[in-house]
Amino acid sequence: MLVTISSRHMDVSSSLKAYAEQKSNKLTRYYDRIQEIEVVFDNAKEQMKLEMIVSAEHRNMFIAHASLDDAYACIDNCIDKLERQLSDHKKKYRNRKHSAGEDKHKMSGPGTRPVSAAAGGPRAGSRNRRG
Image (cartoon, rainbow, N blue to C red; front, side):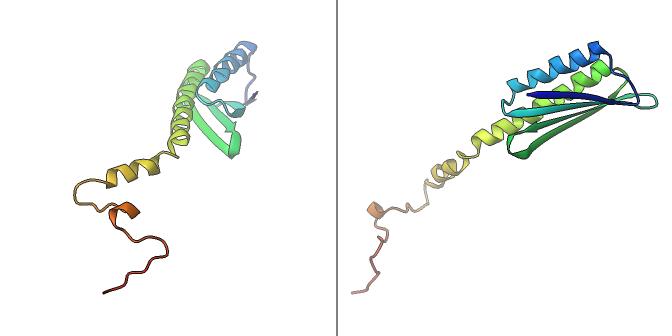
Protein backbone atom coordinates (compact mmCIF):
# COMPACT_ATOMS: atom_id res chain seq x y z
CA MET A 1 0.00 0.00 0.00
CA LEU A 2 1.31 3.41 -0.99
CA VAL A 3 0.90 6.44 1.30
CA THR A 4 1.49 9.82 -0.38
CA ILE A 5 1.77 12.93 1.80
CA SER A 6 1.72 16.37 0.23
CA SER A 7 1.04 19.94 1.36
CA ARG A 8 -0.15 23.30 0.10
CA HIS A 9 1.11 26.61 1.48
CA MET A 10 3.23 24.95 4.18
CA ASP A 11 6.03 22.50 4.93
CA VAL A 12 5.13 19.26 6.67
CA SER A 13 7.40 18.26 9.54
CA SER A 14 8.84 14.76 9.70
CA SER A 15 6.92 13.97 12.91
CA LEU A 16 3.63 15.00 11.26
CA LYS A 17 4.45 12.84 8.23
CA ALA A 18 5.25 9.87 10.46
CA TYR A 19 2.02 10.32 12.44
CA ALA A 20 -0.10 10.56 9.27
CA GLU A 21 1.61 7.50 7.80
CA GLN A 22 1.21 5.49 11.01
CA LYS A 23 -2.51 6.29 11.26
CA SER A 24 -3.10 5.68 7.55
CA ASN A 25 -1.55 2.22 7.70
CA LYS A 26 -4.11 1.19 10.34
CA LEU A 27 -6.95 1.62 7.82
CA THR A 28 -6.19 -1.80 6.36
CA ARG A 29 -7.79 -3.30 9.48
CA TYR A 30 -11.16 -2.12 8.21
CA TYR A 31 -10.79 -2.88 4.50
CA ASP A 32 -7.89 -4.93 3.18
CA ARG A 33 -8.22 -4.00 -0.51
CA ILE A 34 -6.76 -0.51 -0.14
CA GLN A 35 -4.22 0.32 -2.83
CA GLU A 36 -3.24 3.93 -2.15
CA ILE A 37 -3.82 6.64 0.45
CA GLU A 38 -3.21 10.29 -0.35
CA VAL A 39 -2.94 12.83 2.48
CA VAL A 40 -3.07 16.54 1.56
CA PHE A 41 -2.37 19.22 4.19
CA ASP A 42 -3.49 22.78 3.48
CA ASN A 43 -2.65 25.70 5.74
CA ALA A 44 -5.59 28.07 5.27
CA LYS A 45 -5.84 31.55 6.79
CA GLU A 46 -6.75 30.54 10.31
CA GLN A 47 -7.26 26.78 10.21
CA MET A 48 -5.49 23.65 9.11
CA LYS A 49 -7.36 21.73 6.42
CA LEU A 50 -6.74 18.08 5.69
CA GLU A 51 -8.01 15.85 2.93
CA MET A 52 -7.50 12.10 2.83
CA ILE A 53 -8.26 10.12 -0.31
CA VAL A 54 -8.28 6.32 -0.14
CA SER A 55 -8.18 4.38 -3.41
CA ALA A 56 -9.26 0.75 -3.28
CA GLU A 57 -9.83 -2.05 -5.77
CA HIS A 58 -12.53 -1.74 -8.41
CA ARG A 59 -12.16 2.05 -8.56
CA ASN A 60 -13.62 2.59 -5.08
CA MET A 61 -12.73 6.00 -3.66
CA PHE A 62 -13.24 7.10 -0.06
CA ILE A 63 -12.70 10.79 0.80
CA ALA A 64 -12.60 12.57 4.15
CA HIS A 65 -12.12 16.27 4.94
CA ALA A 66 -11.34 18.00 8.23
CA SER A 67 -10.80 21.66 9.19
CA LEU A 68 -9.46 22.21 12.70
CA ASP A 69 -6.81 24.26 14.47
CA ASP A 70 -4.46 21.32 15.06
CA ALA A 71 -3.02 19.14 12.29
CA TYR A 72 -2.92 16.04 14.52
CA ALA A 73 -6.60 16.49 15.40
CA CYS A 74 -7.37 16.78 11.67
CA ILE A 75 -5.65 13.46 11.03
CA ASP A 76 -7.58 11.76 13.84
CA ASN A 77 -10.88 13.22 12.58
CA CYS A 78 -10.28 12.05 9.01
CA ILE A 79 -9.21 8.59 10.17
CA ASP A 80 -12.45 8.24 12.17
CA LYS A 81 -14.50 9.22 9.11
CA LEU A 82 -12.63 6.82 6.86
CA GLU A 83 -12.94 3.96 9.36
CA ARG A 84 -16.72 4.36 9.28
CA GLN A 85 -16.83 4.60 5.47
CA LEU A 86 -14.61 1.56 4.98
CA SER A 87 -16.42 -0.65 7.51
CA ASP A 88 -19.82 0.32 6.05
CA HIS A 89 -18.58 -0.49 2.56
CA LYS A 90 -17.21 -3.84 3.68
CA LYS A 91 -20.53 -4.77 5.36
CA LYS A 92 -22.45 -3.74 2.25
CA TYR A 93 -20.13 -5.69 -0.02
CA ARG A 94 -20.26 -8.84 2.13
CA ASN A 95 -24.05 -8.90 2.56
CA ARG A 96 -25.09 -8.11 -1.00
CA LYS A 97 -25.42 -11.77 -2.03
CA HIS A 98 -27.59 -12.79 0.92
CA SER A 99 -30.37 -10.22 0.64
CA ALA A 100 -32.30 -12.13 -2.07
CA GLY A 101 -32.40 -15.34 -0.03
CA GLU A 102 -34.04 -13.64 2.93
CA ASP A 103 -36.94 -12.38 0.81
CA LYS A 104 -37.87 -15.93 -0.21
CA HIS A 105 -38.20 -17.05 3.39
CA LYS A 106 -40.29 -14.05 4.34
CA MET A 107 -42.72 -14.71 1.48
CA SER A 108 -43.82 -18.13 2.80
CA GLY A 109 -46.38 -17.74 5.52
CA PRO A 110 -50.10 -17.87 6.08
CA GLY A 111 -52.07 -16.63 3.12
CA THR A 112 -49.30 -17.12 0.57
CA ARG A 113 -49.32 -19.79 -2.09
CA PRO A 114 -46.22 -21.98 -2.49
CA VAL A 115 -44.80 -22.16 -5.98
CA SER A 116 -43.48 -25.68 -6.42
CA ALA A 117 -44.30 -28.67 -8.59
CA ALA A 118 -45.17 -30.83 -5.57
CA ALA A 119 -47.80 -28.34 -4.44
CA GLY A 120 -49.84 -28.82 -7.59
CA GLY A 121 -48.38 -26.00 -9.63
CA PRO A 122 -47.89 -26.31 -13.39
CA ARG A 123 -44.88 -28.28 -14.54
CA ALA A 124 -42.64 -27.40 -17.42
CA GLY A 125 -44.10 -28.65 -20.66
CA SER A 126 -47.59 -29.35 -19.32
CA ARG A 127 -50.69 -27.54 -20.49
CA ASN A 128 -53.77 -26.59 -18.61
CA ARG A 129 -56.61 -28.48 -20.33
CA ARG A 130 -60.19 -28.66 -19.29
CA GLY A 131 -62.18 -31.83 -19.18
